Image 1 (tube, rainbow, N blue to C red):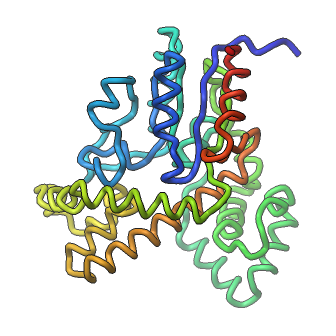
Image 2: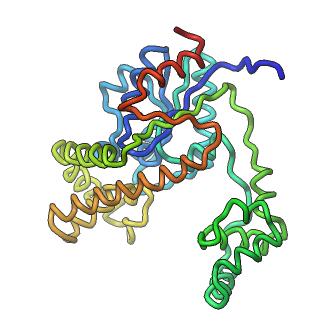
Image 3: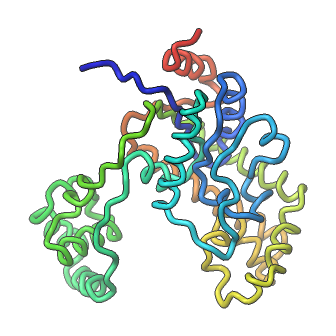
Length: 318
């Protein structure tokens, strides 16, 4: 097989508060890189402190892409992200710079690196029928039914994963085509670079939990609640009938802060709920990362030298 001569790019993945941003900044400065944010909160204007958005000083040191693309009352899809990210990466490569993709939004990484399947949208009637069958027969029985029509998907999906079983059966019943076939047909256009995929993830969850608490306390000290008060005062959000359903306000921390300012619990209770929500986000991110192929794992506290060697080998530097 001929060598891949495309220029390099780095994908820095990992759970929230694992240290991806600091590492991306250091590497970008050292290797002539530019950062492409892969974070579904950072696309929204006005989400600054609570989203840990890079500030003016960091942006002056290193060019950043895909920040502040939408107002907080607007939406932004994974498909839009993939298109915008491809354009940013092509521009960075064309200027001889190193793209560093950094963030924790798994769906965005999947849309960019693997593509999104143009499969049938959700159908409430079909879903209701599947749910009724599950109530009568149990999800393991529906998993067995899925195995008959789509053994590839059934092998990937656990028998106790109702959401994915339901979606796979829904797609098959709506289209007559297995969901695995839709997913295979979703190969995205080839990126103009070869990508080294790295997971920055502490081995010790207690370490990550401590980082989460420390970061939230720093955000509160920096005025996070005042930031949410300013969002609540925006006319477009004041007029919105269900602001808590907006993707921007559903971002971890923001939803809990919004509810606290609505009178739901004390400041201490808000802090506890925000920490719990952030830990749950990290847990989902670990689950997604474990399913990623060609991903190399590093503990930021223990594997610094090994991580640097992996980067140097990929870039061909010493």
